[in-house]
Figure 1 (tube, helix red, strand yellow):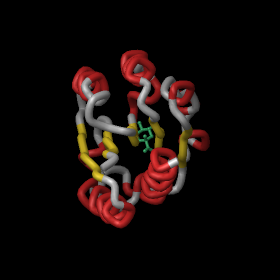
Figure 2: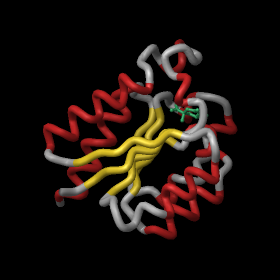
Figure 3: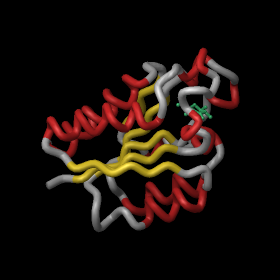
Figure 4: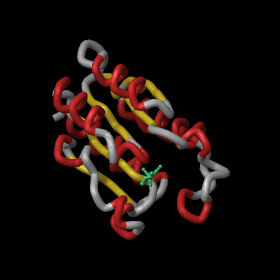
Length: 145
Ligand code: DQA
């Protein structure tokens, strides 16, 4: 069975109470629950990982090759800064879909640059929880061919 790795970057553990006007009120558990339902209905396995530490995310991506068909990632603030996460994605060559709750292009200028986008299969930004759900559906379509 195909397996998707979902990675949530820094501060996404605070969803539900974090800048609700920007990120909404859904908690990370709420989001993961909706993703699990979608994956179950599609007959795809799914694993969740959240970290506030760049190196832990790099390690997780680096170890993903053997076990995962695709990665769905919200790199959060590391989107805009992390050469290391970008290089890890490029190194493992697992199809990777980048998602953001907010429309990063409608926000501060420093959020307009994604170091991840050039090595991602695609990016979905600005649809709240639906960004994750649309991203997972696209990921499933991709791995099922
Ligand atoms: C985010 C957007 C990033 O700019 C920000 O640093 C985040 C969340 C989003 O999902 O909208 O932490 O990735």
